[in-house]
Length: 482
Image (tube, rainbow, N blue to C red):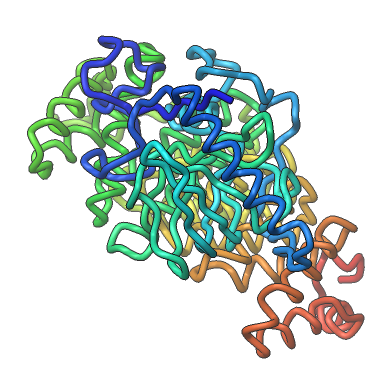
């Protein structure tokens, strides 16, 4: 067996971003953190490693414990992850849109938070680990039984037995995995690292290329000014990678976000990367103001909204005339939905990208209230990526009331891992109430309920007929009785 552990070295492959240069790769670890080094195993070392792997697997053959399927796990069709794919795909607008999607996700079969059960030397400076899953960030949770064997190419990269880490894993032909990267989860950057990776997963699971592009850019515009230094640096690297891979893909809003972020960046390399992205972003031309009687200028003429009908034109004019008054834009969106029902969709689409969180929240509420099903993918994306907790919470609630079956995987992930909107995600799954949603609720009860009796009690209620009767009594539309 020949195993290769790759290191992303600065300068490697010049400006070929698909080689995952450390200059731009949004690595799951800090770029300065140690990683498994580039290594080609000698025949003798390969034999030792193979024997160690076999011994670990055979010694665990009669173990009965198995980590339950996790609600947050994302199952990836086998066609997306061929086991023999040696390198990341090229930048394809119809493929993964994020750099981490094209590189990290593309070169691994599983990304998990796992606890180290045991560590054994394997020769040639390598270690063989037995790990038990705690959460699946990416990959098929049924790919291998857990606990399973992981080959780590250098000593000291993984925590001691009992400790947990984020593992980027590649499936070995003979079984078990090799660790491509190992990152801590209990340091100050751990929460931001996991949250960011979950965001990229949610973005890459969106069905349409344009939806993925819009969701990624919406996330980067907020993350590049995040309070988390790790999330901010990661967003800068992702912006630089995106600008290189898709030179015409950035928008004026990205130029604005980068311009505001650059003065606050302390690291010279990050400033250089941010500037390289800014140099490729188009700058919006200043709109001309209409002259008014008596001199001066008036309000900017309203922009045409594709698909808008005469019914919502007055609301479009109100929205455009309130550029500095978000409360009036918010009112215009809600009034348009009340007047035109689903016909308000063209204005609602614009409002979902409004710079003010209260306007985006109103637009998300309007989508759920009048059931604009074509915007469900946008809500799924915002439920994970929006910088505002209020917007994310409203998106989750709206998806539940719309009974959006396509949101089940995302909602289950939020329910199990997101403290800010996790409770609302449980209620949304209960309202969707199809077989997939109910199965996810049962799994959440069985997994989380073991350590949190109150959560188990809540999920039991959500699974019961009493919940349906309560919602019906409150006039919930999803029950079919208002």
